[in-house]
Image (cartoon, rainbow, N blue to C red):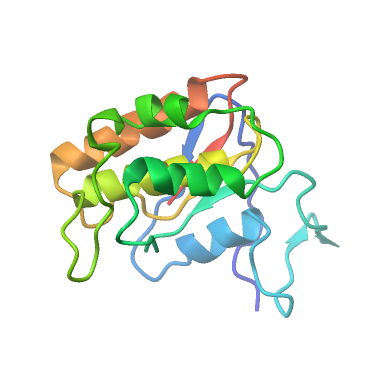
Amino acid sequence: RVVVDGASGTARRGRVLAIIGPSGAGKSTLLQALAGRLDRSSKLRLSGTLAPPPSRPGAFVYQEDAFFSRLTVAETLRFAAALRAAQSTSVADVLAAMGLAEVASSAVGGGKVRGISGGERKRLAIGCALLAVDGRAPLFADEPTSGLDSFQARRIVEAIGRSARGGDGRAVLLS
């Protein structure tokens, strides 16, 4: 089944690109396709040709996050940083860029463990994703402001903008 036909576009480094549409329109699926995260039974064709997996995998922030509730914010970021080989971005840089320095020693929380706010969790998820890839890889964020109040949503958008403009710049695509 053809989901999108006759569409074209460019996601440039240093810019934020939003995929918009009504609920159920396939924004999340398109974002996953562009990030090369569809399951192997799915096929992505670009210009009629079967698309290869992305040569530089991007950072992907899912709508729902999964953290260890008893780790602190800083421990969570250090854990994410330890999962990758190259260290071009430091945990301290991410804490500052995501506005998490004040809560670095707070438990992430979840379930029955008291922790950081929903907006802080979203910024932590973005920070973890950024630590997982090199500084020029694109960032894909699936509904990063979903469920947040306007103040927290604005902080998320500002953090994403800083991520796009920082370092060598990265393309940011969000739904």
